[in-house]
Image 1 (cartoon, rainbow, N blue to C red):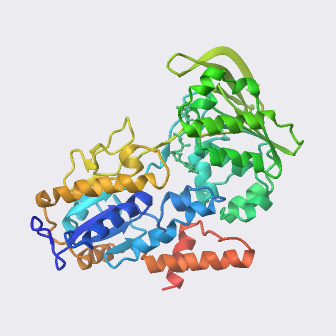
Image 2: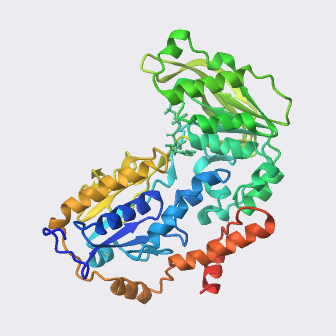
Image 3: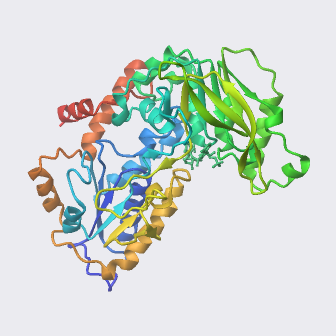
Length: 459
Ligand code: NAP
């Protein structure tokens, strides 16, 4: 046992993790792993989520047709089912519990709430009906309870997706896939029905810079070459690079992206009913009103790159006939009540995960570093934060009521219907059984009330 710590197996370090997405679960894993070593600090971790479901963006962000990526939930489940961990779903910081409540029951808190808001384009017409963020669209098709009630009218034949990251690729691909292709995904049933009858024929992905500056990864880009009902169209002049420019590409992913785009540009279109236009060096400058308060077209300006690689408008414009615009230009963190926040960067200010201006407070994941990286990136990020926390252990103020019973009693006194891991398993079993009956991987329950009904019926 570490001599410089007051924490023992009888009185373990009691930690609250706020947010059960990848960064939260990796933080819990790191704490429990070190606690199991001879020199480790025994720790007990409660992982909270405002939703009744764990796994954050793995359930609500990862594309429904990328089921392999979601298999990481088996590992996450293992972490949450460790005797040193608990999942407390349906508990919201700021509503059911305050930071002061947490400090009364936990020696340390780790905020891992991700980045749930979106960035805006800042162009006229952005608030017209039919203009929305990819964040909202992704939440809708992935059955996020906040978006499930949204009436998504998919009447558009043309859709512009602004941005050149993996999220832009995800939403473009989902729009271009047929119902048959989507059937084998875990897309929410309401979204599958809506997309089944969607009249979309043309999806325009609009990248403001060139192919060498795009943020997407090659595997995701290649998928556009394999769509059953959609041609992928790339204009050779928009991806043109001189031999010297091509040879100067040092990043392997960028080089492979350029190779894939060149192959797409060389294809002869098959005349399929749908088309995905991957456009480069263009920026939307205005979303135009169709006369009824809806998007009727988007005006785009051709760009060139300046010496620093930034997009600069050329004064050449074009109009695209779209009735829907999805901005996919990055996520943004949202402040938590009672927790320091850097509004400009959309993150909790921190040094190696230590919250600046906080006491016994730490952070990890997108709310710590901004919305970047893949699921695995959060592992190293959370390991860094937990290392900071463990280094601080001699200086932490031990919580006055550091037990599971005391926090449970407080939540019960406030009539909070805490969803446990086994409660969630009942919901999951329900979803999987529904999926089996429908010949699909799962039928996601998207309405919060219905989720809680299924859970209560399983108790
Ligand atoms: P992202 O990778 O940061 O891409 C954002 C894109 O928006 C960039 O191309 C950026 O272009 C563009 N952009 C920003 N402001 C703009 C503006 N005003 N006008 C036009 N374009 C603008 O963000 P993301 O796609 O939201 O993805 C977030 C993270 O999740 C990324 O790390 C991503 O790799 C990850 N993710 C991974 C997967 C996967 O592995 N399958 C799937 C989804 C998401 P500039 O470069 O010019 O700024």
